[in-house]
Length: 289
Image 1 (cartoon, rainbow, N blue to C red):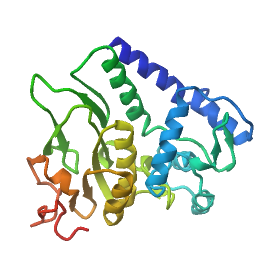
Image 2 (spheres, rainbow, N blue to C red):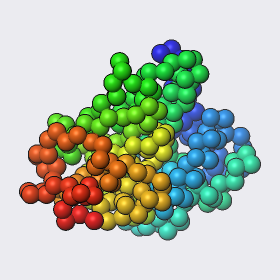
Image 3 (tube, rainbow, N blue to C red):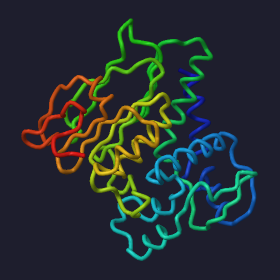
C-alpha cells in the first residue's frame, strides 16, 4: 500500500495541471515553441496516448486541453467563435516533436486529467506484481484494475444504472483486466468534451469498457462516449476494444456481443432502457445501432 501511494504521488506531481504544477509548466513551454525536457513519467504516457488518439479517429484527444480550459469549471457556454477557432486548429499529439518536446501547433495544450488515473493504476499494478503480490484490486474513481482473484472467486463488480442510482448488472473481471467507466452522473457537464465539435458530448450517458490495461480502457471509454450510439461500434473496432456497454440519452442500451456474454443483469429500471427494449442476441438494444 505504501508503494502504491508513492507511485500515485509521483504521477500526480508530474501530471498536475494546477498553477505551478508540472503539466502547467509543460503547456506553458509548449506554447513558447521552445524545446525542453518534460518529466520522465510523461514520455511513455505521451507515446501511448498518441497511438490511442490515432486509433480512436480523434474522439480521444488529450491535445485538446485548450478546449477543456475554455469550458472551465462552472463557466457555462463559451463563445461559439472561440470554440470554432480551436476545433479548426485540429490540435493533435502528432504535432509534438518528441526529441525533447517541441510544439508545431500553438492551439495545442495537454490535458491528461481523465486518463492519469488509468495510467497510475497500470504502473501500480505492475509494481505490485514486481513485489510478488498476486491478488489485488486498485481503483481510482471510475477506473480500476484487478490482479488474480478474490478468495478463489472472480472479482465481481457492479455496473451502475445510467442514472448512477442502483446496479444495472454485475461484471466478472478476470486477472489483470482493467475497467473504466465514463458517466455524466459523476462528472461536471463540461468534463467530457467531444474534440470534433468542441462541446460536451450529448448523445451518451455512460460507457463502460474492459481491456487488458486501464489506460486503454479509460481512453476508449472517453472516445466511445464522444462517438455516441451511432459511431461507437466502428471506433471500438479500430481501437481493438471487445467489451463495451453504453447507455444513451434516448434510454437505449448498447453492448458489444462479447460484453453481452459476460455480464449478469440485475436491474433495468429507471430509464436504463426504453419501454420494451431489451438487448438482442448480439447485445444491442432494440432500435439501436
